[in-house]
Length: 234
Image (cartoon, rainbow, N blue to C red; front, side, top):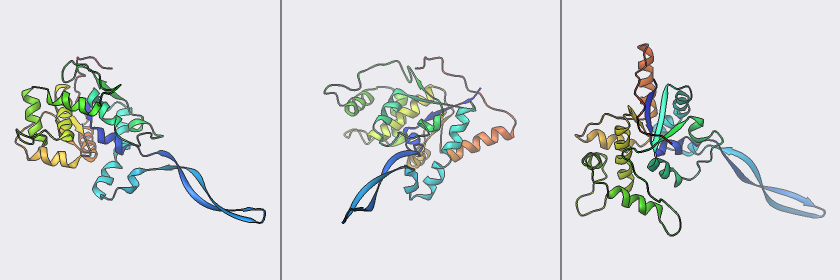
């Protein structure tokens, strides 16, 4: 069976590399005796990753198509939760011609890390505030432990950091779903968690590390299978 990999939301951001846009261009037109300067727009395809200045980040982002291909052929099984899906709704420029994560299937796990349902938007509801209220209202010892490990916990008198709180929730969800890896391009999350004394059954990896793990398994002539969670999926 394929290896179960939880997809961090920022992976989908860096995987949107074929955006169709209109690029303005000035031209000179001759209208009878008049010379007119105007702007036309060319239909072009752009890759936002071309503007990444961090060479390490760009190198990792360039490996995402190879990782996605492993999901297409079934070597890797990508999953996320409703909270991860909702997090992507706030990310701009995900309308890539190559499709979400280059067309690799990503299943949304239901009832992970526990069964719940709520209204996330509509009317006067602020989705981000509701998500924050939901996450901070969870009373679970492991989730609170992971909040400290991911840097979300800011002290008893301060609210937790929202992004790192989501990181903790994603990692907790990945643990409950028996994932082997959490794929991310958030290098800070890797560093912060590595410095903590809290261990996890899920390895937080960047694309190059995940591909290296796959290569090691291939070299050994075997693939480690992880069972699909018994919970429902949607």
